[in-house]
Length: 411
Image (cartoon, rainbow, N blue to C red; front, side, top):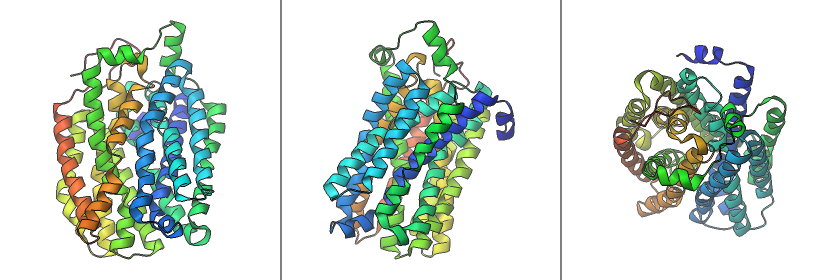
């Protein structure tokens, strides 16, 4: 199904659920990625090392699984809609509080709390959408939904380029309170997931421990898959602005433009491969996208001019986020019905936890090679592309399963 046809197949409540989840995820990513542009500025302000500030990214990622578990558990019991609103309000509040951090220690604590709140959004939002829209529209809309992440990065890059030189890093965090307005839209226009409503009417109780006991092999597999996915994504994104600033000495405007170009590639890849997965299957689409990164990686990491750096970033993110575009549909289709608010998001964010050391790891590798972030990024990208292709090839698939109905066995 084409993207246009997928949107035409939606009624008004289904579109509202999609828009709300897309906006929530986009602005969630916007708040997260503001941090990666200002690591060096914060280090200078607090007279610290870049590595010390990079722990803020690590802490955010480490605390996301806890948020995914808590908010997912609440969403399975009280509904996707009210918990999604609560989650967005909380991560917006912690982003604003980061603007007033008096020390690096307090900032690290606030970024950990932000990670806790941020961790709940993806799982709840994606389950709300996938339980609401028609099965045949999942692939196309999965690709668009996941690219809310890239839209958030693009918005962060644009905000950095436009405002950083005028308001500094604290001002950028203050701008990050904007996502709170999405709650108004959800309150006015979004309806509860019909799958959750049906389970509520039938008085079907959710039990995460029971679901994990019966599906523990699947959960471990998804967690490993998402660990590799998060290393792949964060390994090509989080330290990239620092790479441009420190290794290539590029100014604010150029870093902003290259980052925007990279995310245009991300959106292109995510939308294409999400739709493509509806035709060829989730696993095959992921494998093709990840393997595309291998010939691109040397060009992406070792380009020497701003134009070539931008082209390399554009192509690399087509591959990286192309593979990611399949994930919202794939994980929700694999998830047991009774814990879909918890299972996909918790597995996703546990992957983030195990990949959370990426920023610090890449700083250490760069320091070992005389500040060459290119070697660190190239190494992570290549290893994770191969790992993802293997994991996707050996894993299950449940394409177009009826959510809330009789589940097919993954295969």
